Image (cartoon, rainbow, N blue to C red):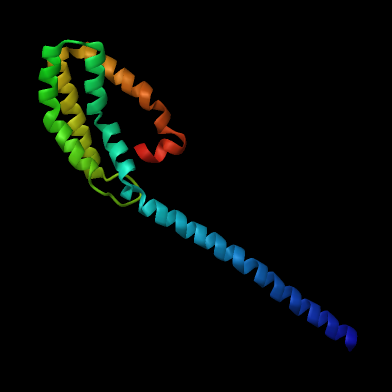
Length: 156
């Protein structure tokens, strides 16, 4: 009987020990999964991500800077700055908000697309299509690295 009781005791201990070892890792994995979900849910509450995302979608600052650097006509620059002022104010208002969810809000994305189109229409009216093409090529090159890797969450 001693051998049978020892075997039973060892079997019981092995079951208990396997459950003890499995419980922390299972709990740990569940906690990590919950942390990832919580992070995804709160992705857009970080103000710098919202601001970068809005300015990526409606690059008023880069557009004015590009035009000032490569088209040094003060009269045109004053005109375009006046035209883009309402867009810049709306972009600033959008960037000051806090968004929650797993992706960028579609209604804000739609408004940003509209503002971007309006901005480039203003640039085209004052500087011509060539300036629009150059700015868009510059922006595409500048932000190409943000569409992958760890910066992906900023622009998506």
